[in-house]
Image (cartoon, rainbow, N blue to C red; front, side, top):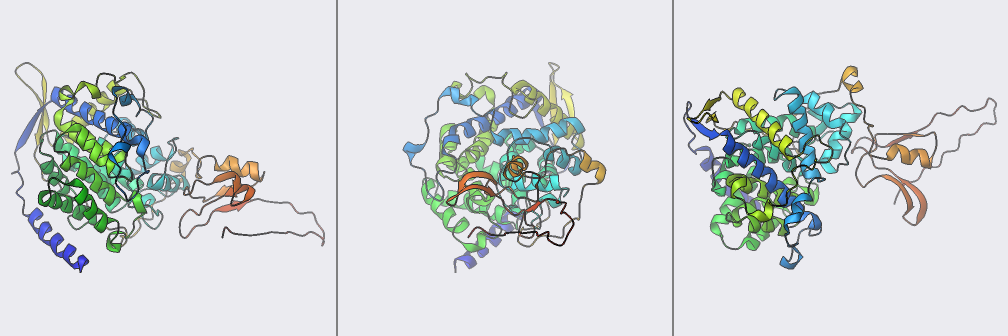
Length: 489
């Protein structure tokens, strides 16, 4: 009965969303470049504040609320704790590709650059990058046939850049999701990032977070479960504006406990439930910086990435100049983000340059005000969502493989970090291929009560990990090859 009620409510809200008015063609919004930089800087700082604040709690509260006393106390020096966070440096890999090749960079080049990244990864990111290194080019690297994590949170936590370089231009964020989001995700996993990007794009002009959320929803397929989650969060907030913990229970019941909303899910790392926690912070935080981050964090699961997303969007609405000193005064702008070429000023310059490119692509222009300062003149265009393709009913694969020339550009090994070395230590002369990243494969001093165990994991449901060696057997009838095979019960 519950499933029927969900469907009916969803259909009603979808109809309402589709009838929302959009601005007439030819309308423009103006944004002084100095104000753009101020808000864009705040957006990056909001991400940093959220992930730094929540990092000690990450995945320590699964399917349960974090007690208030378990939330760390914010101190100004914590703002410098995020320069080594994957929540930030992965998306800067995408920015680097855009900086080098422009907004028209091909999805294949984006895949090559991501394949060559050297930092550790998990979940969909790791599965997608492993596929790329094996020669599976995007978009197939994120397709469910090759990737068992299509709805994981990965692109959702990395998509902030796509809105921060696209003020008032949600279609730029949508297009970037089709390019970078499909390296590792599919369906809701891609839409989640496009939604986040579109919210950032609107945050440059709108301070009402409910309206920011509505704008984000118009950028993704209305029939997706992720969009349904967003509509639910808005409705539940309006029905119950003062008790976020009650709304948390509603979200838990539907998006964690109902099997219909667990299709293609990878558990607590699923983008829908974590996206709900992002929106819970934005809506119930009611514009308060600390409460927004705290609520998203106390919802649990990925409790550093979620407040990073909600904090980033809210900080963008305010701008850096309006932020309290507890978030700004100790920021070390000279520190370089791990695995990147950027410190804070360089990051801002790259983003501004890409925003200027996007503005030109979108049909906008740069004008000067009376004082000679640059002003972005941004055309108002309704968002055009991607095609609806849920991961449990995916479209056909593209049969996309890297060419020999492209594969030669990928210098990183196509197995999890350290696995080649582990195999060489365990069994000198043997090779490993098609080893998946899940469960942290490698050499264990002790595992399952046994000493010196090599742990492997299949690449996917159809592809097993392969250990191989070539032996030259001596001639003669007495040569015997003895192979003992076992499995982990």
